[in-house]
Image (cartoon, rainbow, N blue to C red; front, side, top):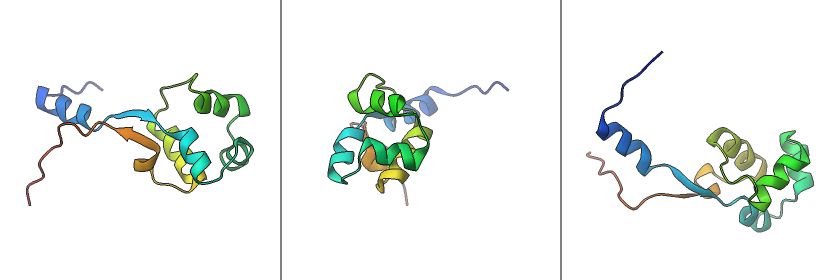
Length: 91
C-alpha cells in the first residue's frame, strides 16, 4: 500500500524523531545489567552489547519500547528527542 504524505506531515513526523538512545545511561541509573536485559527481553547478549556500546546506534522504537519496559523507564526517557521546533497543540 502506498501512502502519499504532504510536506507538513513529513515535517511533523521529523520533529518528534528520536535522536539517540540513552540505554547505557539508564541502565546505570536504574541499576540494570546486560544480564538483566538478556533475561528480561530474550535478546542475545551481543545485540544488547552493540546497543549499549553504541556499535548499533539506530535502535528502532519497537526495540526501544522493549528495553524501556525491561528497565522500568518510559520510552520518553530512553531517547534524546528532537524538540527544537515543537508543534503547537490547540485546545
